[in-house]
Image (cartoon, rainbow, N blue to C red):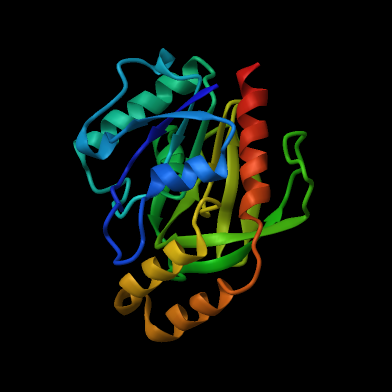
Length: 232
């Protein structure tokens, strides 16, 4: 199965000592899929939604409400995917883009940054959630949150810091606010890079949370199963 990675930012070379970026992290998270890459933040889009079997949208330093032309184009691309029931998974910015594209609302969170390895409670168990977990811990790095879900969405997970931690649109589109693909090294470098914006106390607490095991690989297995089940 070929997965198209819609790259919404370029993090390669951003942090000294950290090699690679979203391409390498998603390939490691989903090793049984073949990837094609599309730098949509540079207006490099697929020719059609049929170019790949499934699609994933990455995180980004941008916000979906900033008025970028490429975000509008990406939103239209997602609406086409939804109409044709093509599998799609949005991660962090991609999760927010899914809500934005389908008529939901995204804004800065009143409670501030969600950062570090944080718990998400599962509200609804679905067959693709294998191994089953009542809650999971994955890395987060976001200032924006989904404030209102698109009509007809199903809320799947929430956490103390984020009311919409995971949701589904129809049977083929999934949004996850956290970053199951992040390595500890990448997450740590990103926290340090944004330390001044996050605040020292919150950054230190987030770095401590990365020292504990998290469920990124298990959530990666969920994503793989979701894509395969949505493809049928």
